[in-house]
Length: 69
Image (cartoon, rainbow, N blue to C red; front, side):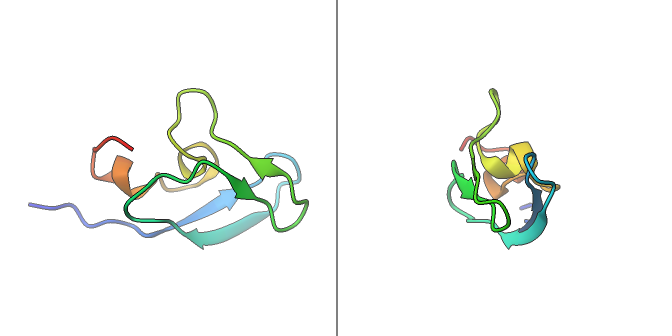
């Protein structure tokens, strides 16, 4: 049985605190994300596979499926 994937995550910039809901890629991890408010480029924290796992409220689809990025 396949677990239903949550496609959206609200990503919050650690620099300025701005939050925005984004649709995550379903077949890959996203390593970079530019904040639309302050334009800082986010990268995953050490040990995380992508910016959604580091700064989002929902982990990326590969992690939701318990698969490797």
